[in-house]
Length: 516
Image (tube, rainbow, N blue to C red; front, side):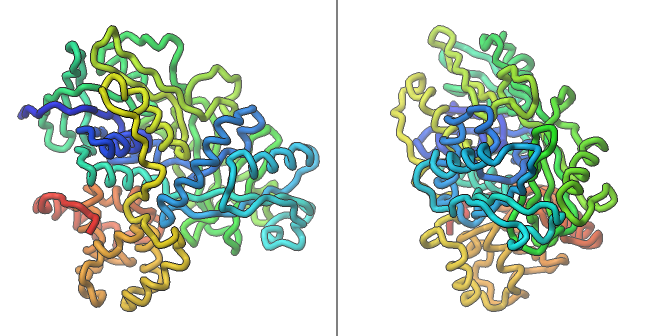
């Protein structure tokens, strides 16, 4: 079945962090926006990151001072905007004599502390590992080290919250909807969409089209729009990054940055209370970005890195979960994958005054908000709007926690909801922030949360995720709206799949705002 829709100001193709951020910014400026994503929100690159909001300490080696400065400033902005899903973390770097010299590390950390201007995070410094908690997990020959600050983020939730904010500002968000055709006709784009669930098609028009398709940015230009690339040599360079999750390797809440003899670095990070996250790798990738998995060689590389530093060895048998993603980096023709710039490049094609097409090449999760601002700045003249920037001072849904102080706010929730077990309350607070009140509603007991499907998953949370966050499958809930997939039993997983199967047969009521 085919339907006809009215004209939009902006159609954004791609439901990763860049597309969601652009849709949010545009909707907040009063534009009529539609975002489409072939799969679930954050189904690919944006849920497969190392989960850091950071300046990128190692980028200083490649003289990416502008990118590091921009990212460090964004670290502060995002920490205030979403203190429930973003929080500070300290990183320990054991010193290895035959790798980067002390003067280089000290200089890099000094720049890291000062490039972004005033920071709310603790400064860097030198530490004696044998007298530090972080040293206990390391081999005894590591005596000296350095410590610095960055931030952790629930990456796929960051995407969802941007999409949710966009929707609440009037954007039309359509996951599981492919853009199957787009052609220019004067000052309009004629766009065809296909619902991947029902197969229905929709034809609409738009004043501008944004290609934020990530790893598919170039193929979208060629196969969907039929445009010959005016960008010349502007292409993305696909770089594969893989991660391991293993049982917890240490008892403290600090992370590690480990240097490897090949010049790369690997993070070892506390993850989901019970686990440790290890990553990432950097490999050039030439296959289908939608079909990707960690290789045996990458697994060995990461395990050997941990063994080089930690008393406890890690083998492939210890891995409880792994994931891989393709980062669509702007191709600056760097010789090594680890040296490819993480900054973004935008290309605006107006074709003699015709409807504009803007393509996004590259980028990183930390700078998605400034990328969105730059996109709207380039589209301001073609769309006849003022460049009114607003997102830097506005919280994301659930982020309006008093003074952005999560630790001070959490005890007030315990007083308000004494019937919620401590661990479950922490998870609700971290995932939903102040939107916890929408999720719990008038509940006065656990029984008021509906059926318990097992392992702390209640029907009330699933209803919330279906109604407000576009969850349609058990995988959406377990691996993108949360990482509960690591914590549940097989029986709970089966029950959750059955719940969604029943829900599909009995669709929920129309979606409404979650801001209550």
